Length: 143
Image (cartoon, rainbow, N blue to C red; front, side, top):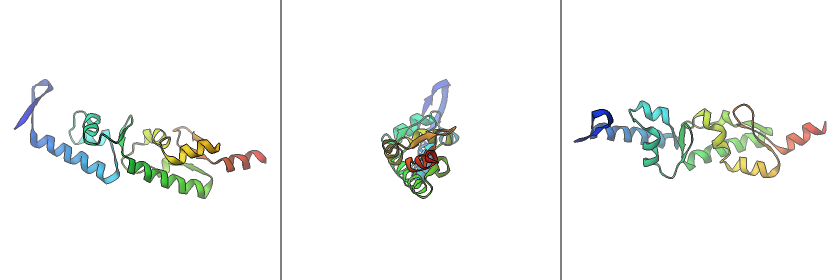
């Protein structure tokens, strides 16, 4: 069994099942998956495949991210921010989240949302992945 794809290509159902299993494995490992990784599995439209398989995950430009991956990212960034007063969240990016989406994913974390409310600098730097606590900003401007 199979189906005829655009351009007259025959795609056996076995290939489609293997692509889906591979995409599921990538997502299960990290709670997120980059479109380019799913494309390497032979998926002609990785974004559509991931949207079908993981409808509750959030779509970004280069990846699809589930709540668990955002929670892991949030916890790691929170710990670093508490320890140092500033953090480049890109250094804490979980596998499966594309580096070019790091700033956008960061803005969906609890730590970024609460930091904005507290008056911290959020989303600074070239990639928009840095957070500087209000306390550190105040300390630097006081001297």
